[in-house]
Length: 92
Image (cartoon, rainbow, N blue to C red; front, side, top):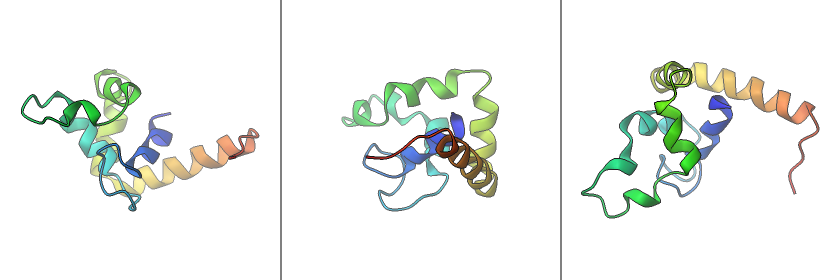
């Protein structure tokens, strides 16, 4: 789930550039920008499911790994995506 959540790096929820697939999502999770009281847009960054990931003791080491090693994120995301598609997930 942590690897697949990295897809949130694409789009407009405040994690990196809208058209770039990279590990910016994980570096943002570690920075927890939604807690920045000086940023009027802080509440618009991420989803509640994103906000809880870095507080989870099992997820945090994975987030740290992906933040520091984009290739590890790409490898884990690819494997998780292929597995998910093999389970019959389809896109409308």
